[in-house]
Amino acid sequence: MTDSFSLEHLRFDIQKAHLAVLDQTLLPAQESWVRCTSVAAVAHAIVTMQVRGAPLIGVVAAYGLAIAAAQIKGGRDDFSAGIAAAAKLLAGTRPTAVNLFWAIDRMQRRASALGDLPAAERYQALADEAVTVHAEDVAMCRAIGQHGGELVQDGEVIMTHCNAGALATGGYGTALGVVRGAIAQGKRVRVIARETRPLHQGGRLTAWELARDGIDVTVIPDSAAAHLMRTGRVDRVVVGADRIAANGDTANKIGTYDLALVAHAHGIPLHVAAPYSTVDFTLPDGNLIPIEERSEMEMRQLGQAVLIPDNAAIWNPAFDVTPASLITSIITEAGVAEAPFGASLRRLLAAKIQ
Ligand code: MRU
Image (cartoon, rainbow, N blue to C red; front, side, top):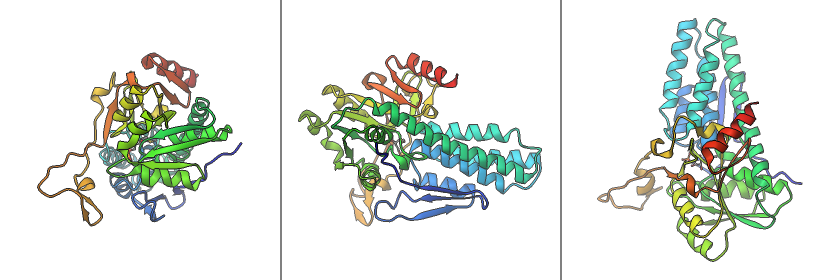
């Protein structure tokens, strides 16, 4: 068995309270690291998508709160005000991925018991918590890979959208974790990555991380998926998620919904791979999931080249919601949930907690 995974893209220096992140806006042309020495720098890295992907945003936000704690030297009141301000800053970065709010909430709960400790001990406790959030995320991805890998048959072609890989998580990946899991189980797998306009996470990031691990990957224009499915060249679709409502409705990168409709029309199974930190049980369905809208400049220009004229309006929603009825299964670290997801997601979660 081989384990196709070697990427490191986050380095936390616990002594200096610094977080270095691989700048995903520059991949694949440049492997360049950004050093974040304040919570403002961490928030900036999330907003500008130097780091992106739902689970990774959560992990990075956890490190951001640890870095904030390192810079608060006063007593209990200063500490709680400083942590609240840092949490507010991070919570305002990106609205759709619920992992961000899950991680902030977890770190704030840990911080609430630390107010009376000396500053160095408060920092140490939050740094340890952030390292644990990171390690747990990698472990969850590996478990998702194991469960999802079992669904994959030898020789399959798997289509994916955006980047739900090592780069989008603490490491290993969710959708790409399923690919890695299947390969670790000895299966031959080929991946078709949709390029994922307008920021090209499929072409730039999924292709980069799979190719560097020696995994067979082909990039297609987003609009080619239906043609490939109609001509029998896709066996399975596996995507990640930014937020899953209690009934299984799933927000993911814009274009996932059309991919799900096309897969459904061709009888091709579509799986969502995500850890429980992506499930938002407070939302009964996907209608209330906030959908981020990003700058028109992401579409108007590519570097110096103008792609859309100044006098044309642009609308750039970053996510869409795929109804649960189009999803074959949701692969979590606790196992594979099937419809009706309201019951199966809760059942698996209960088994995980026991
Ligand atoms: O806007 P992005 O690049 O942060 O969007 C990422 C995605 O939509 C991913 O598919 C999703 O976060 C799942 S990541 C494991």
